[in-house]
Length: 307
Ligand SMILES: [Zn+2]
Ligand SMILES: [Zn+2]
Image (tube, rainbow, N blue to C red; front, side, top):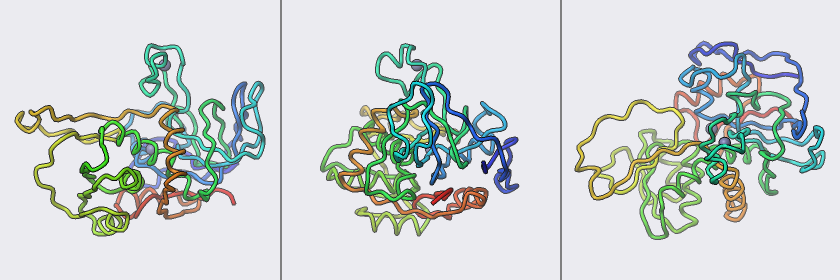
């Protein structure tokens, strides 16, 4: 099969993904083989490719926002019939036995596997995944529009939940990338007033189109809870304690549970969420990632792998 393979981490400007012929994966017991149609491009892919996240598998095929059709079921796999349209996200598998898994916090599992990082991902014609970690994709989303729901959407949704935001409250987005452009639609659906703080004029425009009350490049004295949705971030500068006093909160979001994914996909279909995407062919994954790094994507970048 054709895939985009990362042999060794390197700056995306050097186009490190090699469009190559590689062996097709085979589903093991409990796994499904999926024929990939689209795969979203996420900033975490960039952090994997550029080595900001230490390599877990090398070479590796990136990509963790996969939409495709069940091609074949492994032994003991029977959850999805052949031909069913499904999605595969970042959380590839957990041990199911650690303290976190047993307490409903599988996003913090002691022994997790991540799609497109510790196992091969969706920048490829085929991918395998444990069927218990595969999502049904609601009808009504074309393949391209569905792909960004699987990370940008799910992580944005978990971030919104962790912020504790309620109807009538005010929410600020810092930066307005793929996750924010989905989360704003959920927030507006919940009756939340949204402010978008981003330097990029195209991103400001998109925020206003999606219902932001205000979009601009300066933000004065934000107060409340600050939720950080990234897996890798630059260091956080020191701050005066009185900015944090009054029980304000800074917290991170680590991965997601399967329940986050299922809840989000249900809400996304109800609203319904409409993602804005820029589509690239699989062979041009390097170009898509360069564009993402240069803030040249409005909405989300998606690779089209098969019709
Ligand atoms: Zn666990
Ligand atoms: Zn992601």
